[in-house]
Image (tube, rainbow over all chains, first blue to last red; front, top):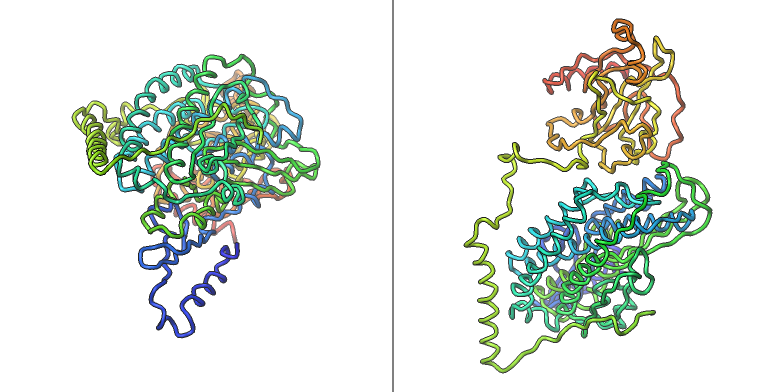
Length: 388
Length: 243
């Protein structure tokens, strides 16, 4: 992990070049991939040690979009902090909100009702589908196919519209609050979700025909960037990246929250942990999410959408409160250290992308630069989530 | 790990045959994908792109769409805000500043200016949810581009005075007119360089502001229709305020 600091990186480059300024070494060289690179999905800098076209070593350099969200949280009340988590993994804003809400509810002993939990589960699953749709489009684009990008965004728009109608925002939603959800669902919500499910099912088959069954795409994914189960666990990878390596760990199954315990769904797992498995696991997760929504959408119980008064300053008992949820990318955890005041003493956010990105140092060496793009894209990283 | 083996689906392996069968599957898969592309290419009705600036007449945002904050005024032109500053406390980034005054007639705290900084607002809706009188609303007005950042600091109230409930109790229109005076969108203390609102914006983590009768600057005659002119006028006002 010495690779995190820039000084050690410089030192490594200097050592590699040698004392003669590189006159005798002509084989290996360093190339910056990013921070401005279309395939790094944001301001991520990867320093590549290359031997010709072959990647010898990948050193991620972070910090280009660090905003100090954890520190900012120390000055905000618990309810206010929720809106900052939208800005971490912006494609899983609802799940992130949920993690904070869960931590505060657990700490302050707030009992939510069935309706709240069902609404939360449905919107979080909708956003998981939207997130995977976006990933699918971008994955296709990283591989050189532009059409999936258009199709992915076309269908994601439907979900964005559904969520926009109920929540009022498309990306930074701030919807799931400690003690409930900000608004009750819109009267059209259930009808539109059902319409979307019937609309999207044939479209998903199109996705499969267009990209999954394409032999060129298959050959670019098969066996590329293999991440073994042991390495995935030891590096702390979570979500589809971990499941693709064959570890069937899903928080929705192992520590059910919301109403996941009531819904029947399968956990997709991969065989080898290569790009193909990661791709397939996500496509299958879309199907499973649709299954969950189908079971829940007609059975939203009656009740209030907010069980506590939306007081600005809620006091949370002293102690350390941790909660975690499964976002589209893995386990998102929030640790609140409270000293009994209305603002947290310390907040720590465990984000899935940080660990998932680090697996690239293990999987990429030995592959070519073009394969590295596939590997990074198959990890589905969101950079603001890594830097926080 | 408490995972039952039964509820899993395992990724299918990619099947590959001999050289010629691979060639055939490769060509077939390519043509199948092309078929989908051609399907949409030949059906322009499936195109979902909206031509945004041209479709303004038909474009309708959802009711709950969160954009420009507004303080709705009723048919008499009065609002329901009591200047209780709960929205100001609820705001995570100090985008709201309530300037209150002692009413000349009622001798009670009433709203003078409701200053909202769009430049630092994150549209998190916390103020709207927190308002105990439901007098705030995020309106769907999303076209807010301006050339000067200072024009993103609005005064939401159209008058300084008590709530509509108090005002409507007074039946005599002339008596009522004495209780309020007009304010416009850009009236009041407006910062120009992204700094705190003059007259005491609350910074993050700072203790609650001490309630005092806010020093009311003379209303700047800043016409909302002339951005450049109003920006200059405000700049002059800020300079003057510092001296």
